[in-house]
Amino acid sequence: MRLILMGPPGAGKGTQARYVAARFGIPPISTGDIFRANVSSGTELGVEAKRFMDAGEYVPDELTNKMVRNRIDEPDAEPGFLLDGYPRTLAQVEELDGMIKFTGHSLDAVVVLRVNEEELVQRLLQRAKTEGRADDTEEVIRRRQEIYAEQTEPLIDVYRDRNLLIEVDGEGDVDEVTERIFHALEAVPQS
Image 1 (cartoon, one colour):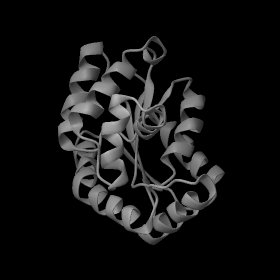
Image 2 (image 1 turned 180 degrees about the vertical axis):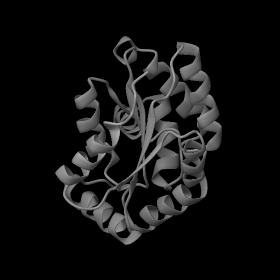
Image 3 (image 1 turned 120 degrees about the vertical axis):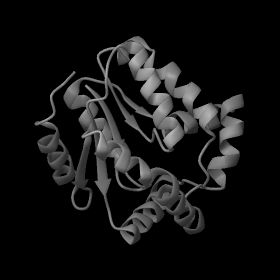
Image 4 (image 1 turned 120 degrees about the horizontal axis):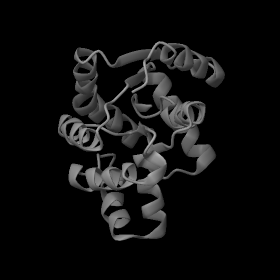
C-alpha cells in the first residue's frame, strides 16, 4: 500500500504513521525525522535544512525531493510506504507523481488528520517541553501553521479531486484516532 499522511504540524502524523505503517507492513517515511537526523549528524543537507527549520520555513523542494526519491527507491519500500510530511507543496505533488509512476505503481490513499489550530499549538508547546525541541517556540509553531494553510492545504483539494482523500478527526486519544484511520482504510483497495 502506498499512502500519504497529511495534517498540520502537531496533528499526530508521526505517531499515527508508526501504527499505520506497522499495520500494513510498510516503512513510515518521515521527512521531519530524516531532516532531524541530518541536522544532528551535521551533514551538509542537515546544515542547510536547519536554517529553514529554525525559522519555521519549509525546506526547499529540491532538497526534499531528492531525499524522498532516494528513500522510496530503497528495497524495503518496494511493497509500499507511508509518507509523513511529504508532499507539502503542489510542485512536490507533481514530483511524487513522477516518482510513483516510474515504479509502475499508484498512490492508494491520502489520509488527512483534522485538528483545531489552538489544540495544535498546545500540543506542540507541550512537545517542546517534553522532547526539548528548540524549534518548537510559539512564534515558530504559529508560522508553521500559516505555511501549512498557504502551501499544503491546497493539496487536499488535489487529492480530493483524484478520489484519494480520506479525512479523519485527529482529536482525542491516540488509540481512538488510530482506530478511525484503520476503519477508514479498510475500504481502500490496495494496488
